[in-house]
Length: 130
Image (cartoon, rainbow, N blue to C red):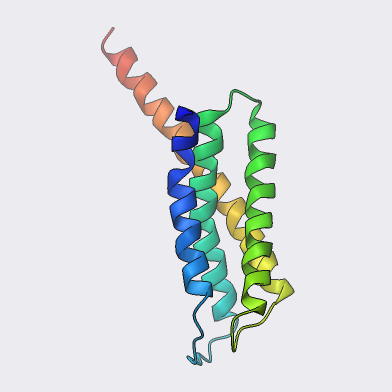
């Protein structure tokens, strides 16, 4: 039961994404691929939170945790796009799902990088106390 607590940040953040996707926006920004960058950044954060959940709660291999993070993120990205189909003035875009998947992958890499660097720092501190 305690392992579920590690997924609370991801669940809350995805709820926020879902809420934002429920709104119709009439904002027109003439920057090439701006909307894809927004998708990438918001799903990069979701990738960080999902990675935290899987890496902290599972005792599986690194590969399994990474696959679960990526698959869950892609499914959530697809559900978000499907949900937009029912929102006025919103639409489903395949390339948004691609941007979401890339964001999830970057979030996973960032989590892995920062979690490893923190372990290295803690290990270095323990060594220096010997």
